[in-house]
Image (cartoon, rainbow, N blue to C red):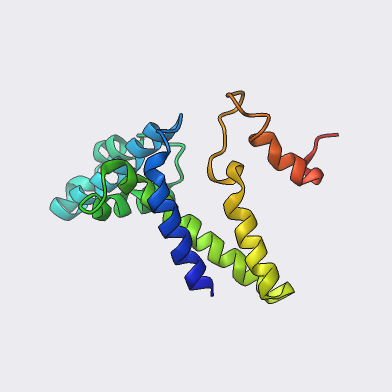
Length: 160
């Protein structure tokens, strides 16, 4: 069931991804992931050059806030997917696959503790929560309905 949920999630997100415009910070994350993937090209073509400080700084300081594992994952998935999908979908596919894995993992964890029906409900609840899939920028339009929405559902996060 978990594999089915992961596949269904990946399909739904991949099919619907073109209907979503470019998000406010997506260009920066795309640049960081593409730069990380390009560094691996240098590693393959010229390993000694790839390990020089200047080369590392050139490829790895682009969007340095992006976690390295996510940068590598998204960049490598983009490198393979860009031959099948358009550039924006190829850049989103790494995160789509991570979300699909998260949905499957959530199902497994909840189903083990509370049963399969609860696992399915938890996975579905996660997928329909827009603030999870598309968090708003701090202070941006819709923030009261998006970012703070999580605090409404999880009152223990409220400040005193």
